[in-house]
Length: 262
Image (tube, rainbow, N blue to C red):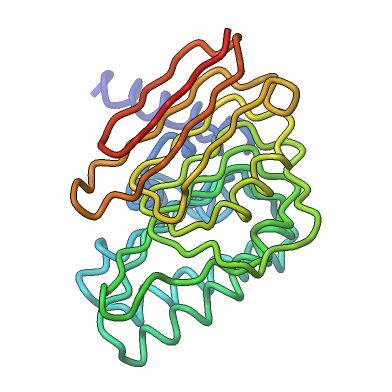
């Protein structure tokens, strides 16, 4: 009896913590576990609805794409309407089969990204499982106008040619591109717009023929990774590195020529 009382008091003490501390606790939980905390007490009932990070995957919706899209859309709209800010947003989305949900998903992506920009998102991780018969989904150009970004991770996207003349990535420190289609001109424009970049990771990207890393542009770069394990379909790529302050370099794959200057 005494133990139950002590446990109850302990829970109450946690519930009485300031909202920003409760948000920090929820920050380290998955989206599913964060929602479950709503049953702990009245204080916890709606805390998960305003936590500073959101993590959505359609895998957790057991194939019900409409429920998934509706949940993400309503949640982001509620955050925006309440004037809330987001630190981190992660989205895993499968676009398989050219049906209604495919077109709706692409349209909603174009709606969600401006909302994220308006909420000052710092970390944006987007992973798309696509149907090879449909090609790779074009990334809405508005993502390149998100000045608040500190980390950008894109997977299975086409960065295309429709990017802004000026890319204000003045705070971006981490850039990770995986299985992304990007032409050299677009890539050079992106990385030359990131003066604080410390980490660059390129894994399975197509379209890159030459990568030049220069100390006058990338003076803060510490970690560089380039992986191309597509074997027969791999494209030739020349990598030129002139950054003596680099701490780690990882280059793996075929048809890669790398030159370094001291």
